[in-house]
Amino acid sequence: MRFQYNSVSDAGLIRHDIGGFYVANNDGAGTVIHHNKVHNVYGIGIYLDNSTSNYTIHHNVVWNCGWEYILTEAPPGFLSIGAYDGIRLNTPGNYNLIFNNTLYNKYGLGYWGRNFKEDMYGDVVINNIFTGSYHVSENVVSAHNLFKDIEARLVDPQSQNFELSATSLAIDKGVILKSITDSFEGQAPNLGAFEYGKEAWHAGHNFDAPPKPEFEAFKTDFMNLVTNGTFEQGLNAWHKTGEAVQIIQEDSWGIETAKTRMQSHSVANP
Image (cartoon, rainbow, N blue to C red; front, side, top):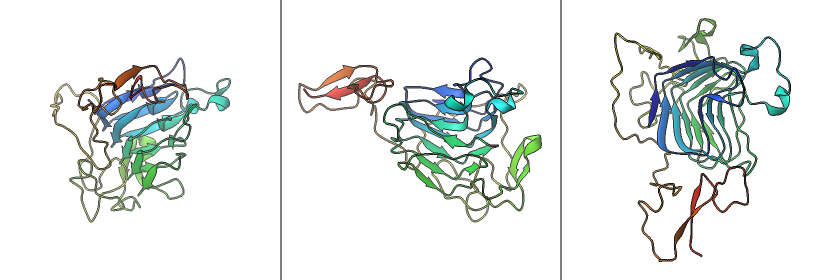
């Protein structure tokens, strides 16, 4: 599944524990969220809530997420809930890949969890620009990112131009990732959602040039290639070694003692 080249804004005006893109308790099975612009969200830009796995999020620009970009004063109780991030990966959440995104303003990447609070095993964060907060567990592989203590030198963020200027410290600082940075300029890929020296991509509708999506299988580095790894499709793609093997169906949402750990299915050999 693909979510691509959308412009999403002014979401979450009624409640803030929500995202411009939002999924929960879900096996993405290789779903890709890419080349979207998400901004002015009273909540979170791109939100993978608890028990969500196997998503790739790349080349998105996310800015102005949080109450102060929507309201004139803080809502009651916002400090205790704190549901504001450009991208959030709530736990448990595994094999979610965050590549070449630009997150602008104070809220960057974060997480929260009620059960398995630190489990972000398989999550990888590479080639991104974070001008604000960054908070992940020790399970996460994090490399070649630019953080708020180093100025990104974007062209004109106040006018929503998040391309890299000629003096940006993000130029040629990235690493090559299959299907992500295949057509980079210069000595190495850039950090963030735009490649300096190439025409910038655009998001949102254009009735004069309707999209022509390509439905091709997507594979990239660090991707979990196990088919039906969460058993949401029963034993499809698996071979039983014993007749006693069975599928357990139980909602694991927020329950650390559940027999299913992610989503609603598991396998057992009683």
